[in-house]
Length: 308
Image (cartoon, rainbow, N blue to C red; front, top):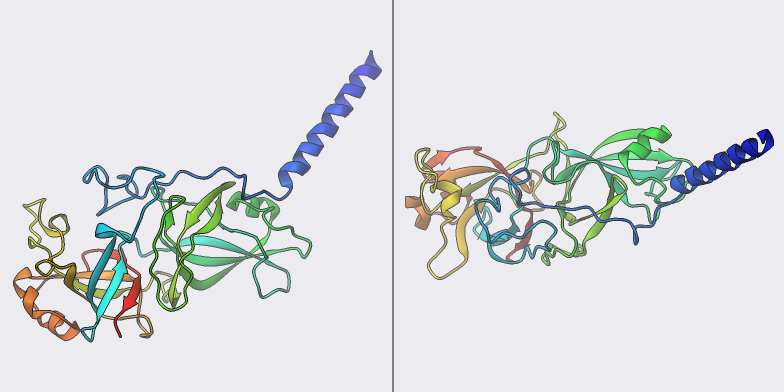
């Protein structure tokens, strides 16, 4: 009987050991569970809350960012028409994204998906990510790591970089077809706690954190159908931006465009009096308008079109 019990124990340990080895092996992104994403919940959104606008997509519903309020046509500093996507308000502190490199290599591990640890609606989430390099052994197999906990558990070296990437997390199947230059419009995948996340990547400019380790910002001048009034909840952003009659053209003006040294897709919002709408069509006229409020919020609006 003792021999039988011992045999059972040995077999159990062996099976458990095999299971551990299997769990530590590479994961398959094609068969992994896809994480639930909701950019329009009260926890995730500021301007685009489904609780305030029932027309916004449900959780996990693919979003077409080429339609409606998700894309805006305004002016650049010199008066040229620009277009930019609207990804709502973001904080100044970026979130961490982990990219794996083999020892001695200058390129990321082939086929390895990037790793994040927060998604929209969670504390610390941001569309802007500061890149951390994770150094793995030369014999590392892609996608063995699929979570931040994996990185910590294995004790891999982590190196901070100042590199920023603008990668909004979105539901699978979402589309945003406009980019500047030869940027890819495809949707990318990453790992979040052993699950797959999908995100856009906007690379119209190379970005780095500022001296405080925060996202850089640039001014944008906007005006609303009803000037902001603390006593009127329907004023300001809730009333919508002013557009030309029968047109989608706003008189919102961005202070910088891709190629400018101080360009950033994270905009500090300056609000000007809608009485000045007709006179504003470039940076000079925007700055000359009656400014009602400065730096009221920071919005992620990557520029994807600049008229020639």
